[in-house]
Length: 398
Image (cartoon, rainbow, N blue to C red; front, side):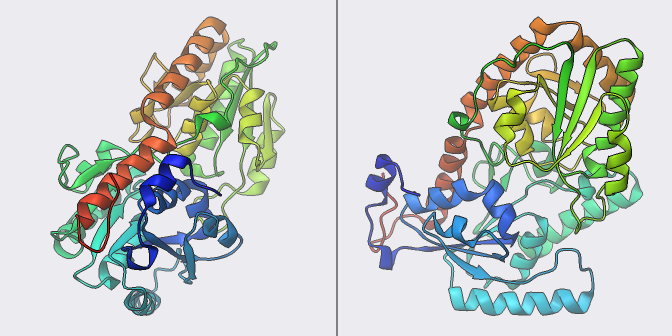
């Protein structure tokens, strides 16, 4: 992939003497689906870039940005203390070999592993992509886990050259940080999205409100709530259909079993379509995007893509989702776990096609004003410049 002209001009540095940025992420597919713009941003600055991840099928896509790839096996489901210690020691050896000037750790597991394994003098960016079950659970276990992570951050992971990158303000607060402290904290528009890849043309009119969920098929995403809400809306007389696009994540204990998805697909108005690579095509043939998440989100990419496609969005009033969607503007926010409230939103939109169109246009504007890939790239470039400063051996560009 070639860089745009302004990026080529900005790079203007001696590659051999450029600072070294190392991304640490659990899976190569996760980096490719969400974080390639950050690698491109680093390359625009002229940094040497290495991605340390478990490699399966996406090495070429990462290397196309100009980054190196170092394969590192770390099972993300294992909680065995011996296995975790072995992983930390192996990672420490990798980082000693790579000698990064900046270590950019992506998601909570990589933050913990990298925080323990990194040399003390390395500048670090801790990029939280959501709290997962720690954010979704509201019981004692969830509260205790969040307190433990906050304490761990303060005692073991923090330092004078540590910076934090969040996708929503709530996660910063959960970790005991001030989201307005620009000396330590940056907010990015999730992974960002390229609006040019999505058409904002109105969907073709149909006889019913066509709702789609594009997500991993996880209980935490509220897939069951979307199914129940669709049935309730149809019982209320609204012409609503629901398409589910996504696959169960076999390495995630919160995956919805395939037999459950097939059973739901037999219900009137509900169809499980399986995974798709044509997200833009999904939104061309649907009117409304839905993500009834139970929480723990950073800023879901599926909402960014739907907004870029000019689709009204119905989602839950949880961190991340509410950062993008303003209730009554780009769509509706409903309480998590509330199928009746979600059904009422479906009924409202089914009865008001003008609102569907206006909310979709507002969603596209919202993306263009602050949630594009370019916005995210400029945010991380500012972070990297601040950590590296100026030196006689390297120019960080204008």
